[in-house]
Image (cartoon, rainbow, N blue to C red; front, side, top):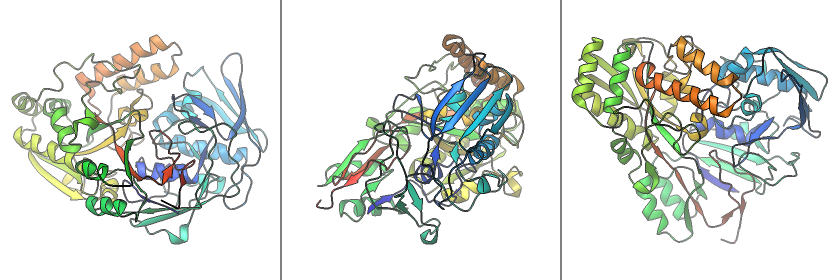
Length: 502
């Protein structure tokens, strides 16, 4: 048995219905994907055995590998996969882009399906291999036909672990058993791709909201793995016999402020722009992470060190200027108005980001209502488009891992489609959306980079879909009895083995 303390409480089982990373991680346990990203972020076949593309780049044929079965014993069919892709695409920004160009997506027989496009698209396989929220996980047709706006409550996949629904206690624990019928690929594991060989019989996710309690449980050997140990406890964990602290995510994560574009005061562009002058990344990271070993600053909407990273358009971003922020609030006509900030108390980094945001807003002359709640409550409330006085919100803080911010199409917060399909906060900017479409259709890497930077420049100067407040690398902590952990931006528990003697 492997006992793990996850980053947050697992309350939703539907990885298509939420961008919560804990549900995404649950998805990797239970479900499988058609393609997956390897450690170099290259798409590799997973459930797909082979695929082909027509000479004009418009027709993609996919053949599933044999031996795929759902956890209820039914065989996986192309019809299941088509239904799953359509449901995923209804909720995901990359999926929406892909399907907007699709003439048809239909099964050809039990093992083959075809995607036909109206024009060439440069991100087909990258979309199907999307690494993080929202991942195109495959599920049975009977579940995939659930309205995308209605969460699926039954976790039946074809992946390497089976979810024990009877033992699930939402917010408390989740139990997974090795899927003995799963047939892994022959390749060695690499990132989220390759062979998913499960080497433990059972995995227990045990929620421990108190960071010290979780750390002491690891030290005592009562649990084996802490997904997000509190940064201030890392020195204690490192000094403990039998415990290893390591960074398994080589790409890091970006903290963000997400304003609500649909209601005052951040329905005003200048009010959103004021947030840039309150975003001292060093201040945010010191509060959220603490240890400089695990954080850095980055004046780009794309991960620093990545191909698209650039400071163009950033201007003076990164230098806190209370007077300038106040002046922008004044120009927007909202100075002194109430701002409702959601504070997630059971995820320490998110809680710290919210407190720093609230402090800066108060300094700039805004009235702040800091609403403390657990992650599940915040995840539910951020879906409300109501005015703040009717249970809505003005701003929340969160973080996204580097693959989610890798480009303007994969970046969920950057969608500005002027409708409810956008992520919570609902930005509206037809010009930015047109540029995102241009990026997606472009196949030349250099031209695509130029488009991405133009998108960044507009976001800094006008739209402000969100505000990046620094980069950090989440360490994990685990007992030395665990071997075979895979480096990846997502939680992966296949290939992990446990020495029962330690």
